[in-house]
Image (cartoon, rainbow, N blue to C red):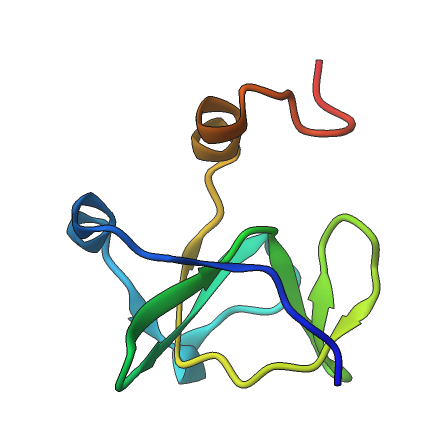
Length: 90
């Protein structure tokens, strides 16, 4: 079984609007989350919805998950939390 990197969503993250997964657009960098009985868990990398399913937006690798919610991916949020620039950004 493949392990997916996800982080528990902290309270301030709930301020950002999450959308139901059925409304996710194709071809855009999205942040995906699973809301379950243990709470909310967001992937730590952007994903793209394709006809074949979900793909890691950076590597292009297929991601075998069943997300429940999505929102726009924010590059700045990742840079601020890791202190590292996103690959391919200036």
